[in-house]
Amino acid sequence: MKIAFMFPGQGSQFVGMGRELYGKYEIVREYYDRASKRLDTDLTRIMFDGSREELTLTYNAQPAILTMSAAVARLVSSTYGIEPDLCMGHSVGEYSALTAASVMAFEDAVYAVRKRGEAMQAAVRPGEGTMAAVIGMDEPLLQDLLLQAGAETGRTVEIANYNSPGQIVISGHTIAVDRAMDLLRAKGARLVKKLEVSAPFHSSLMQPAVPVMEEVLHGMAFGKTRYPVVFNVDAAVHRDESEIPGLLLRQLVSPVRWTDTITFALQQGVDTFIELGPGRVLTGLVKRIRGSARLFNVESPSTLEQLSVLVQ
Image (tube, rainbow, N blue to C red; front, side):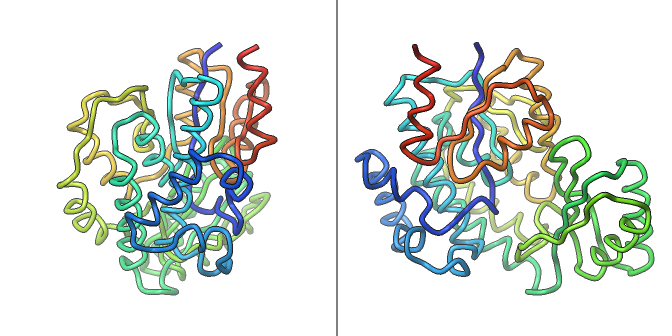
């Protein structure tokens, strides 16, 4: 058996995330409290009792997801002694993966993603950018239609996520994304749906966030990877810690290659995937890529207990 730890990205957050685990496990409370202290913000209150709108703000959602994910990863290791053969995270989940692999200190990571959220939100004025999910469209035709939408509007629309075969997310200026959605529907896409996001993530429009995050990451220490981490930008493992800041910067303006990431893990012999943190988005994507994979997600005491079958 080979195990991959997966860490979710923005969009998986929900009010109450981790409440049951926080009430039952001291180690989870420790992580939540450490995050609040590092950010000088009552992050736990926002996660448990804040409004959906407050939690969804990019600069709150990203540290909230990382905090729960890092806490759950530590809980899984301490409870069952389960260690991964690979780690991977979707978008901001990559910081969770690096924390679990001991590459980044938790306090550094939670601060970095707070600044990342602020920088990404500030890169494009509210309303000017958006994202949309597309299901059931061949990639070459989709690319052609994006080029057409961009030419017609004079604005940017690009692929942001390769989530699973047949599921792609596009990102860019709102006017260009809207035009692309019309073209995709006309050409027979099975589903085209605008996402509830506040900025056009993983597109070239995020370039203003790069120098901001370069300064943030410049002062941080990156250690040797305890477990191999598969990176979003190229679906490959990088073991030289000096490369990691550059990979994280490239990730801001590059597509998340999740399909290739899971394919790489399967090629390495991974047969068991454990999603650590809020939601089951990544579990669903892996199921579409390899239906026979063994899948778990841990976001509550009951889902944690399901991992006992792996150590019997």
